[in-house]
Structure formats: C-alpha cells, structure tokens
Length: 467
Image (spheres, rainbow, N blue to C red):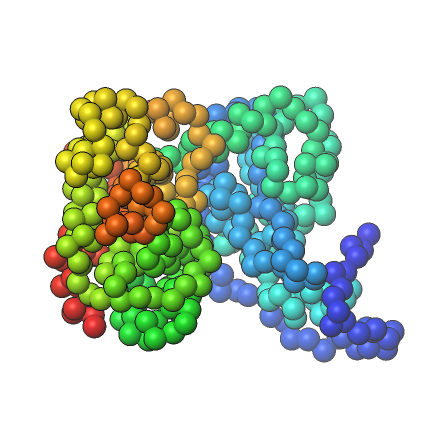
C-alpha cells in the first residue's frame, strides 16, 4: 500500500511521462563508508539494562513526530530524549521495540528508492529532495548497531497475550495502535530514572556543550558595544549566542533568557526584545545543545557598563556567597535538597542583615518569607533535557541523595521586583542569578563551567579583557 504524499503549496501536478522520467537515470548512491556512531555501544548497554528491568515484556519507545509550526511548515525535529538515549537516532516517526527476548528492533522510514513512487521528489516532509537524505536499512543498522526494519512492518497489535509497555504521549499513531496495559507509567518513570547517573560518554558530551556555551558567553560580551546601540539589544545578543549554538552544536538547549534591567526579575524572560542600558545588569541564561542533544545550562549576570555599582555588587556578592555555600555541599550521599537549603540560608541571613527581613534565620527559613526575593529552587538535574529526568520519582530525585555521576545545576538568585516597596529604591528592578553545571564525583563535585568567571572582580576583569 502506497502512503499518501505530504504535498504542500509548492507542489505541481506530475504527468505520467514526468513520473516515468523521474524513476530512471539515477546513479547508485548507496553508501559503503558508513561506520557505527560513537554512541552505539553505550546505547546497546542502555537497551540491555532496560530489557533486564522488564524481562519478557515488549517495550515500545517512539521517536516522536513532526510538529506543525504554521500551516504546512514544521518545527525542526528533535526526538524524544528517551528514544535518543536508547538509539542515538534522530528521524521522526521511528519506533524502537525491545522484544520479550531482549532483542531490539528499530523501525524506521528508510530513504525512498528512486525507481519507485514519487516520495523522494514530491513529499515535503520525507522526500529526499525536500528534507534531505535518510539512511537506508543497511546504513541505519551499521550506524546504530541494531536490527532495523521498515516502519510499515511495525505491528503493535500482535501477540496480545504478551505483556507490553508503551512510552505514551510521544506519537499519536503509536498510542492509537498499541493496546493499553497497566505498566506504561512505570516504563516512563524508569526511562527517566535510568538517566540520572551519567556514563563516561555522556559526561564527555555534556562537557563539550558546556565548553561551547562558555565560548558563546564570550561572544556575547564582545558584542556588547553593537548590542547597546541597537533598539533590540537583548535580541541582538540572543542571536549572537544562537550563532555559536548552531556552529558548535545542534541548537540552543532551551530558549535563551537575555534579560536586562527589570526583565531579569522575570524568571523565564524569553521575549528578549528590550533595549540595553549601560546602567543596568544583564542576566544571560543560555546553553548550547550538542549534536548528540546534551545541553548545558549556564547563567551569568554582569554589568553592562563593565563595572558593578555598589548596590549591584552588594546584591551580586550575596548570590555568589549563596552559590558557593551550595556547591560546597555537593558530594555522594548528600541529600539532593541540601544544596538549595544551604544557598537559601545564606540568602536569608543576608536579607536579614540588610534589614529586609526580621527574625532569626531558622524562623525565616521555616516561614519561607525570604522567597519573596528569590522565588524558586536553586538547581536541577541536567542532561538530554535541560530539566533532566523530570519523570523520576521524588524518592530517587528531589527527596533522594546524590550519587557519583549525577550532573546538576546550582543556580541561586535574587529577584527584586521593580514595584516592591519593601525594598530600597536602589535595589528595585534588579535580578541576579549565577548558575553553573557540576558533576558529582567520588569525593565532591567538579565545576564543569569553570571557564567562566563567578566572582564579581573576575567578572569585571573578564569583561575588560574581552572588550
């Protein structure tokens, strides 16, 4: 059965004569130089671990589908993180099936043969002339080191007497065809939890993403003179960082936050349409996503003038001290929430010393009054997703303990709203966050983003050097 073509507004009718002409006269372009992707042996170990967790069951993990941005234009595709983790593949509509025997089959849409059909030159979503070349089945098997089959051969309704689990909410067609069982939620949870501890290969990919991110931050500082002169200076800097992300990786790992002045008090400010003022601070929260889809997540706050004012320095130093206290708690066996509490204790003591809060530190920590000025948690796991492993159970993540191989961010902040009358005027409209990426090691933690300065004196020297 021939699948319908995805025809867009650019398509023109095809005569029988043209269709026949298009089927002939093509060189053999099958590749013989394909080698396994570096991720392949690591992905095989992960599939084996997943199969051993659910022995004798069929496990179905879709890649996901293309999503429409507008009319017949799609967003650039990114596979579901669980699928990428288990395969290293990245095409839409593919499905990984781990059979009850433990063997894996990757069902995919191979490149269309030139000698049959019209997909390769007419289909705007999958045609090679429109979307680029896909591997054929033999090439895919070599790349991913797993058995590959055509997606049309995927039968999700067979062997109904065997237990099956499906990662749902990723591909509607898979959801519709796969019979519902009682263990889908458990599969989703385990797929998240198995990514908590990063392997050696993942740590290398994350470090690459962090290093590229550091270079992107330097690009932004160098571009400040041009951005300061532009009516949309925030967006200018967003574009500068985005260029680095595309040159050294797949893209940005999340929408960049380029927040100047009071915009920094909006935790997820991504409009990035403001003008820059030399008297303000700039909060830049951005991360490069590697070609293998691992993302960095770094924030720096720096003075657009190159020098902190006394009030800016006072607030920045409190956040710096809070982050330093949080980092000092990181070690195997420490509770995940411990670093946040350490940061908040420093923040609370500082706000009390400034006269903004009254009472003992313990009382203020109990009532949570400090949260008026800091609002949210101080970090999260990091990996294929910027907020990685989000479906993990609380007892193994948020209420769990740190292990060697965990990668996380530490990002305390102060957000002084511009209309907050409890604040002295010189602090209103000031937002500060310092965020770094760290790997938990056997005896502590390694600061992956150490290439970027943290202390205010170092920030000023860094900006002067890059000017």
